[in-house]
Image (tube, rainbow over all chains, first blue to last red; front, side):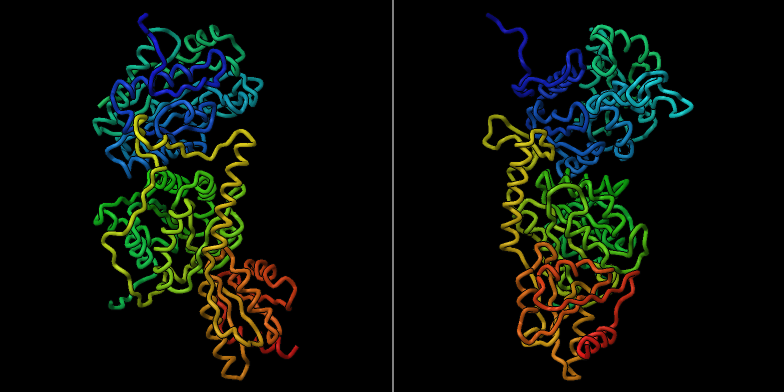
Length: 244
Length: 355
């Protein structure tokens, strides 16, 4: 019998710990497939974040670092400066990248650091139990905004992709979503372009992926996909923000 | 080889390069700016890379990335900047990343001042970051000694896969002294098969996972035990201490770094007056040379010891632990970056003699 679908070789044979309906597993697989398709596995390392993807070093079958909260782009910079002929990616959530790690991501982009960042935006802190993130939508109820995010109290959600696209050092910046088959195809294509920008030595690259968190949103997996479409995409428009 | 008059920070930076350091990540802070400035010019000349980071946090995490990639890497800063680096120092200790961190101590707490101080002993020796770890800490008292210790710092870091700190003070960094630098165009670089460099599943090298997270209690226990076995080895092998005129002395002075040089002058002043005084100078602050300190002070001839520091009394705690009550201990401290004079120290010993 022919095998038509198998575990990608760049993922280890370890079951993901993610909740039902979570987007991390989908994006992990896409990143692994892209590394495999580009034939760069033996020259690639990754940096895992603090957050739900903290155990990414158990799943990606490449050399891996685990970085402190928000510091992944700095760690990746250290690797890349030592091995400019090799490739590195960071995999970060919105608490990690858009809150405690804003300095690191902005300056990695600003330096035109030749690294690739996969940024999972699920509008909430997942691992710590559903607290408000800088990306949480206005009115969104979280464990630290129990009455809904009040923009007069804590501002409006931060748009990372748009901000980083304004920086000269950025070579490829895109925002995609996981809520439909078409958007899944676009997400993988964007991840591939982001890695290709690094391979071509063009500069910093990032893909922001709008990703479901049914557990902390208090929704079923299907409802979570709808919420991406109905609530997130209107505030976080999809598309390629920058491509050089 | 000829002696060359060099400023401390520049000599230290050159010594690091001669020891094989090829990567430097730092952030400007007084009084150590001459180190990154020197590195920014010199490292590209030897095929290395200098990068001015956006923050102390980023700098130490770049050190994590480069050290984890197998390079000889260094960062330097001064007290408030070293406080910011503590997260990364704790991470590098847990993830077993060899690297060298230079702290040109200035006055604290808070922003303090920008003059020399010894107020960071506790932070360096007792663990400024969180968790169960030790930092190997070298405390040189001259520019020449600092240069010599740079090679040892990188070798020790690689041998034990651990960060090493050079704990100097602003005086060491800012003054000029004649130094002899051992030029070494091809420094020996150890193999680092554990480092992140790209993984071939068909190869012999196992996949590198550089990590400080051990979510299962038993797994963290394994790491801590492994680190502590290594720390025991370091304590057994790496203690460094200088004793100066301690044999048969009536009083023993205890000091490190710049203050120890002042103490030597005090020893000579007192000897001219017929008072036999010796000095014990720990060169490694961790591992602390407890036995040598104890033996020097426990001698029958010794009446008491005096610890002198440019702080409110920090190494003094380790001296008292080493003495363990066998002789009276006194402390003389100058905080606020005021350097004690040899005359003041001699006067204090004479008072102790009268008592």
